[in-house]
Image 1 (tube, rainbow, N blue to C red):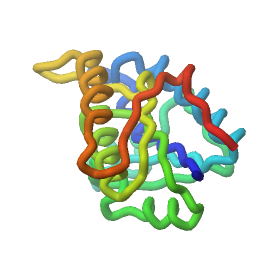
Image 2: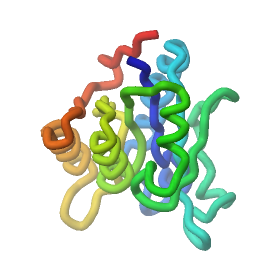
Image 3: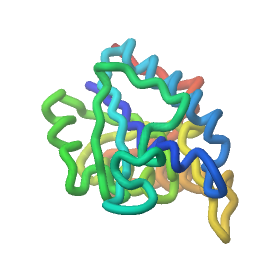
Length: 179
C-alpha cells in the first residue's frame, strides 16, 4: 500500500496570538519528524493550506503562510482549500490517485475542524487513515480545553466503522512508514 502524509493547515496565523493552537511548537516539531520519515520512505508529503478571499488567512498574507519552523522540501506538494474538508473543491483526490496512494497519514491544525473533516472524508473515499495522535492540535473552545479536543478526536475518529476503512491513532514516536 502506498502512503501519503497530509499536513493540514499548519499556518502562521494559527500559531500565534490569542488564538494560538495548543503546543503548536511541539506539534510542529513532531510533524517535522513524521515528514522526514515520510520523505525517507518516498511517501508524498502534502501541505494543505486553508484560505479566505479577504481578511484572516487571505491567500498570500503572512497569516496564510506555512508556519515558522515547519520544514518544507522542494519535492513536497501543496493544496489550497477554502472549506474544512481538504478534498472539497480541490485537486487532492486527483493528486493522490495519480500517485497511487491508498492510505493516508493525517496531522495538523485545527483538530475539530479541518483535521476531523478531512479524516472523515478520507474514510468515506476508501482511505484507511493513521491519525498522528500527538501531531494535531486545537486552540480549544468555550466548552473544551485543547487537550480534551485532541483526546476526544483521537478516540472518536478511531471508533468510526461505518465507512469500511478505519482510522487508527498512533503517537509520532511509534509511527512507522514503510518504503
